[in-house]
Length: 86
Image 1: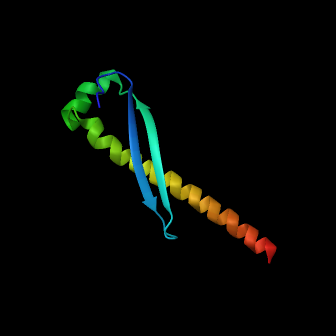
Image 2: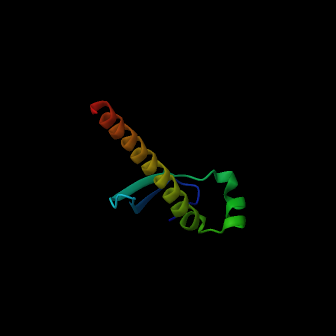
Image 3: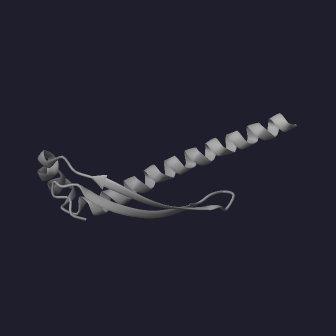
């Protein structure tokens, strides 16, 4: 990934297995552009390959949180319907 002040496109593939053993496969395309004035600080503290080291873990955690919230919402919605049908 080249992030020297220009907008960069990255693709991330990930999957999650949940308690009910369902797998979720996700491909996420992100666009990012670091603040040009902050690049010297970023390079000094994180290195020139900062995007390859930082973005995968950040993207993975965000995807995990989003998928879990969707699953939780669906679980609550589905259970509410079951309770109403009883």
